[in-house]
Image (cartoon, rainbow, N blue to C red; front, side, top):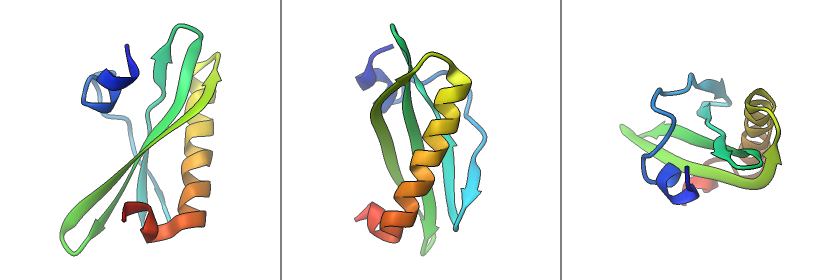
Amino acid sequence: MSLFSKLFGGGSGGQPEPETYSGFRIFPDPIKEAGGFRVAARIEKDVDGETLNHQLIRADVCSSEDQAREISLAKAQALIDERGDALFG
């Protein structure tokens, strides 16, 4: 699956379960590639009745999907700690 199809809705089919962190929802969703799984996640937060989204995609590629999910979650948490609500604007 290409990076662009993943970005625009060509995901793995089922919605991943979110992890709640500091008021944000993190959906670890690694991207399948020839060499393994690319670290990726969707970060969401509800603000004033609107759901804001940020797509996190990193250059890191892991050999296992489980490892990519763990790293995706850790990278998303670090980004939230660093940027907070500024992540969306």
